[in-house]
Image (cartoon, rainbow, N blue to C red; front, side, top):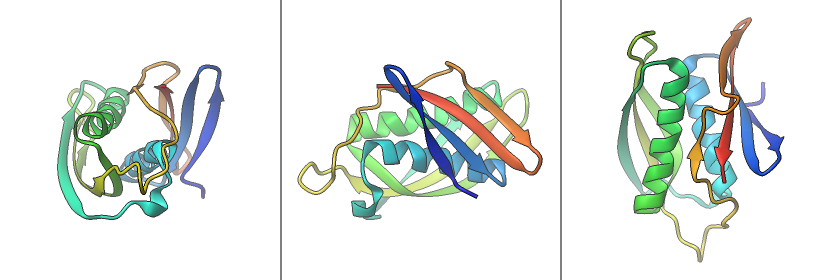
Length: 142
């Protein structure tokens, strides 16, 4: 099973993400997004950061999760590679997620710059389970 694929969207970019569990779906969404920013082969797990997000829906949690990772990149130049979900509570009224991201500071001398992602959006956002596989479509503003 592939983890994600790029969706061609006019003027923006999107990914379709797959996972055998919600945790795997969220990990693959982060890796897919980071892969749009740079080639992850060159990213070293030199430091770790803790991420904690909450929302009022599963879709909102996915957007909040990815936007927090974008914020860490924009504000602190942190690019992640290793993602460890510590807890994911899919409570319909208040889903939450805690994770540890390992990576390093983005270095233009060593890291290829691909896309400048501004935000994960709710545009055409879908999170669903088909059989035993979770799937999500996420569109990013670039």
